[in-house]
Image 1 (spheres, each protein chain N blue to C red):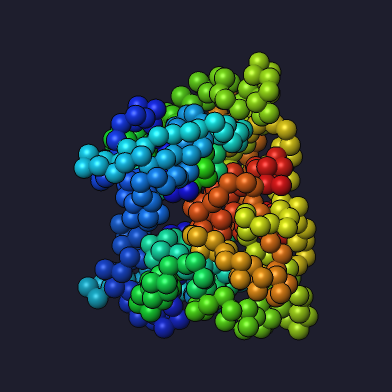
Image 2: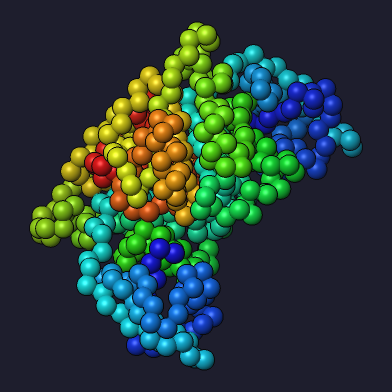
Length: 258
Length: 258
């Protein structure tokens, strides 16, 4: 937790001492009355928090947040529903990188029961996204969506809708729509390699299959929709590892690691 | 489990039906007497296994393994001891990529208790490495070592010893020693960026700190030993994510993703 993030609705109220952020402030960082700490408002600015009082009903704090959060990474990751425990970590890691959007997609060969994960309704998914953002000192979370099938996702083409950085990677001209590069991770029937792709200046949509990969029907559908099938080396990677690897490669190709 | 891996000592004996590989063969892959399956011998070759019989005392199988395993990736990752649960996943993922060696190192700011993980003595670490290799259809495991302090590691310079691919990335001339590029992931005091490094044709040693990063004393020690401090973007990544990201970038720079 490199920054303490607050929901806008939590401002002005004491933070319960049982809240994990309070535990982190008092027990890990050893903060006390009068101490300041790195803070941010979810969806808003960054800056400092100040502990005004530590009372029975919680920590009374004030915020001074004037700094803009970092730009989003113009990357949308679509991934076949992984196991719930892996989903948690994946959401945290993708949020850590600051990707724009995460689309969870039911695939032909994916385990159907993974779609019914409680994480999406019990706040677990949001908590994982917040954890990743806090690690990166970011206040903004990836936009998280779920689709029952790949067909639904391809039909909706959510990457065509205005999403923050998908409108403009620079954030300057919000009306200028740059069409994203559409790629699908596929080590079985690749047309090229991630390593050779040039993504400089373009947003990118990366589709990663579920554990058992893509069906040929899905490969055809993706091709029709304009997706390039790219491999990442010749070793089969785990779904979550493939997502992280693809994001890192896209960042590198975009010059976002320099 | 994309391949069933056997220890050389297990060959010629029935595989207990309670073993997770037997469960995978019978319950997940629905294999039966006379069926073949992808198999490999740890440290040896790849090929096919054949189920000769399914008896009370286990699955009787024969192996026909003639294919050489894939080349190791000429990358050594040194990482500050992470939490045991994260260590397991990290070992699995690094083995999935096929790195040559993994050195676990106690760092100044790392949690001392993490060094005493039972994983290194109870077989848990080896199981994680095997899981990653099986995912990648590889029979070989990264060489795993542990060092109490960074100083010990830097003094021993294990990358100078003959390690499989560190001798030659091509595997052709085992006597030709190519000196590795030494890099340390450091977003706090970087001298350059991973994205700009050219590693083509050279093995690489990547040092990643523990959760709380490097001490300035360690930075100086690493610099003395010839390590370049490189950043990966401007967001603080989790230790395990930073390891994966660094390996993927090194692979890309080596042309191993093409």
